[in-house]
Amino acid sequence: MSSLQQNTRETGAESVREFDAIVVGAGFAGLYQLLSLRELGLSARVLEAGDGVGGTWYWNRYPGARCDSESYYYSYSFSDELQQEWEWTERYPEQPEIMRYLNYVADKFDLRPDIQLETRVTEARFDEDANRWEIRTEGGERFFTQFLITAVGCLSAANVPDIKGLESFEGDWHHTGGWPHEGVDFTGKRVGVVGTGSTGIQAIPAIAEQAAHLTVFQRTANYSVPARNAPMDPEFQEEVKENYGEIRRKQRESINGHPFDINEQSALEVPEEERQATYEAAWETGGLQFRAAFSDLVVNKEANDTASEFIRDKIRDTVEDPETAEKLTPYDHPFASKRPPIDTGYFETFNRDNVTLVDIKSSPIEEITPKGIRTTDAEYELDSIVFATGFDALTGPLLNLNIRGKGGLSLKEKWSDGPRMYLGLQTAGFPNMFTITGPGSPSVLTNMPTNIEQHVEWISDCIQYMRERGLDHIEATVDAEEAWVEHVNEAADRTLLPLAKSSWYLGANVPGKPRVFMPYAGGLGTYIQKCDHAAAKGYEGFDLTSRAVAAERQG
Ligand code: N01
Image (cartoon, rainbow, N blue to C red; front, side):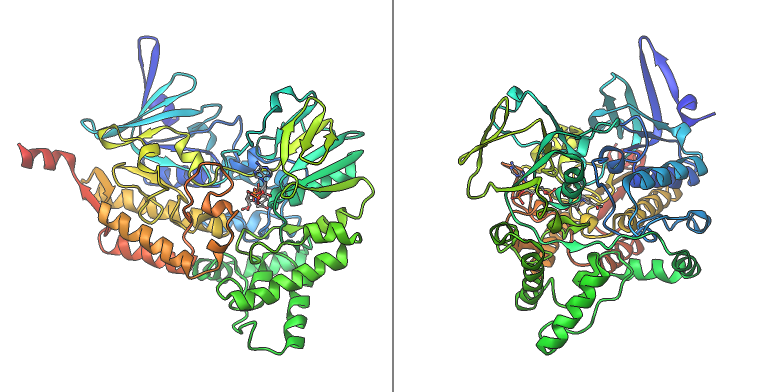
């Protein structure tokens, strides 16, 4: 019998369900959190808006969607059996392969009975008297739970730009983060793609191959490094499996959750010839480890300039039309100060006869007309528009849950000047609520499954600690939160990341969003040590109490 059946009671027309823990979201985070809570003996339920598991990967099924971390480490490490038996087919897994993997995990660990699909959470409210959360869904269901764990992902609230006239467009339009499951056939169509972040850079080459004509509307030119995707070499896969212990250790001790080695030399301490040879070798290897070519590319502007200029030269060498090449060349931010995209034939795509680049920084979009997109320069007739315009990152998915904590304070009010969390795990005033990879944790600056696993295990250990001691209430203190927010800012300021003024790390892509650097840039290894240290000191920075004992003392 599943915990749903065990904990359901019907009250008139309404069904009210009680659980020890409710997890919102059935992606990498939600699936593992469910398993981990079950192992503690808690009754837990996952509420998921989609009609399948997969989270961000469930929604992002646009053409060309592929992971930018390598398959052998963009995966769970918690089960050696799982990592030994699963066979990856490519260096970077394509979206359908990740979906197969997550569905396999859901079946292998028999998670489905405790996952409720097509259930969108619309409200969560902390009831102080009862010391529990009440959760409401779009379908009118109510749930009560001691612990609320959000596993909603960092990049799951689509940012569809508010452009005048969109509703008048006679063709079809889609945001990449909510792609139709049946796919979209662009054969013979005139397609416009707005946005050249990681998503646009993946989608543009794939759409160009199908469409009659593709017009790319670029606001900010971006750096990109070739992915060099290839079928998985069976020998390499075997070697990885034999060495998983060491690979996972390296990931957890690393800066970004990737197991590759960072060159210990500064880009500035080697002669020009050697520096260029190092970049050439890294370019040939491809992938996110281009950042590891030298030790100081994300912390020293002068060192970074050498990498940025190397990539600019590659763009000029690749793109045949000098005017198009110039438009595609980024000058406004240092390489890797925004999440660096990796690509398969992105710059080469602009050499195709059926592709046009429109610079909407110099000629902004004025409106969408029934026939297409009109900029200050011209009207571009289109049959389809693809918005690869990113997400209301990190905070958006949490604020969409309409969460209210103590005293009825809403998370929206509390975060009106930007997110405030302690360790990215809890926010003061919202007891017994944990966030997996929340603002203030390394999250999007890392290989996500690594940070997710660490968070899930930390949360489960904390709940276990509380249960063993008869504690039922945990809340980050305001002092710990303040100190952590300050530390997050200092950590960002030690890097070049805040220099990218149009970055979604800063919330700059969403009009009206507070400009606050959201993820923790101090490195995953350091971050894990800080989380472990807090736990070892009896959850330092958190108030842990038993409500019954507290009430007795008061009475
Ligand atoms: O979103 P983005 P994304 N008018 O915000 C432009 C992860 N990811 O979906 O830079 C016109 O980076 C915007 O322009 P600007 C990865 O972490 C992972 O591409 O704001 N243009 C930009 O060009 C990534 O970083 C994988 O000036 C507008 C683009 O749209 C994150 O998701 C794959 C606009 C948005 O770029 C987000 O990437 C894909 C407007 N009103 C993504 N608003 C993997 O491989 C925005 N833009 C795992």
